Length: 285
Image (cartoon, rainbow, N blue to C red; front, side, top):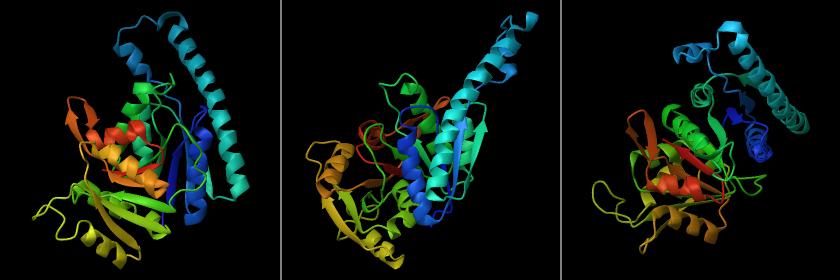
């Protein structure tokens, strides 16, 4: 069971959709639900460090006061949404407001949760875009906890009934499957999909995905193995197409990435899912 679930909320149009997913999971798992608003107000050291001439005359103080007032108003909108849902569903939990770098703050709070619910970055939304993609990437790659990404379009009141697991016998996929066990145990149908499976010591064995299905069975998960060929499609596109054919409401996959100087970037499969997801995606690194 998930016992601690964290959901990032703001005053944006998709906050309610994220909260609906998180609240339903918290109710079904008997979890403690934490709603978090991050104000994103930088430290005064940042201003002084850049040599900005704002100290004299109280200019910096007025700027920070203005930012805090605006953030307090935004936070209150999100707080009302959270408390109404908490009361409606009878959930045990708490509301938090924090200032600072959004990526760092979210990653810190995520380390004390079994699962963190974030929104899919939306390139059409000025508030999201590349900035939220960087936040999402940082949380996934540094928090050490799984993330559930909720698409920026659609309604998902209940997930985890029909789950598609992406399996390639890698470390990241193994981590994702085991992190997702509480979700998989409650699913009515779990399909483990291998795309263009390899054989050999670093492959899938005689029957692709059969070994991981056997492991899942020992944990009380009834999963069926499947495999397919990409036929020139990207693996992310294959997963999304297969999920649509199955009527899957959740995808579980490993988060693949590598470091660059002062940033983290995703591999092709993870990026494709993050950009094109049509159902919530449970990602673990």
